[in-house]
Image (cartoon, rainbow, N blue to C red; front, side):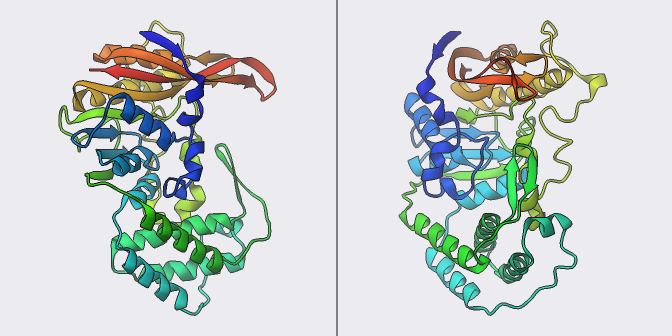
Length: 375
């Protein structure tokens, strides 16, 4: 395996560059990588319109949305219903005139107070009473939209707008609440709808086939054998549960897209220790890591199945910090991939981050790497 250090790529494997790119910036996803990274990978492997690309941990859909911009066929999947909903809204084809007419109708309706007595307690902590009444008023109006495509657009836009005026502060895996003043929801919602429609109008999507599905990466039942030429992805990082818990408020606002048993049924979170087959018995690993790599071996097996001969996998992996050690998850991921049959062509180190214990005592450095593998 060839080893490189390319720290100029470090920012690209974060979501930060997306925050300035229309549509990509509709919803911040701290754990995601950037459009610029996917674009770079497409250039590395000369990905064209006849290719098929997969992201089995697609999050908010950066890989699929970028593929649509370049005219590349792509599928994304994730097990989190709210993230799948978000990704689908971003890649959907819309009739912009219908969106404008629906928006005009929604915002022309006079406010009518809605009973919030049965609203989830967490929502009463997250919003002022006037804001919550406005949210419920608009939710009731959006529910009357016949087209599911349009309804999803306005549901999503309402959630984005609501979070802008909320009391929510996200601190890693913890959702905190701080009271503060805020503008009226109606004003923010209206401005957000206008901005999103303006982004869609300027978008230059090229003809291709794209979709995002709710699926477990350990069982890619929607995909045929050797269907994909390229897989671009970043699996959940070992010992980093933030991505699961961060969207509690959004899910309560849209319960139809909330997790149902998700915490107990994902990578490394539901260990059946009696039947655990640790793929790395020679390594001294925490039990969480053994479970994680057992799950990832299953995921890698599915990726191998659906990847075409000579196809490539580009995977962003971060090392994991535990109280007593740093687990070199990027290196170990390569070892597990080789057990499946992959050839690990290259490991590119792109970030070095200080690892601490109790947030004060430095215990070492945790690396973040790009693994490039071939079938």
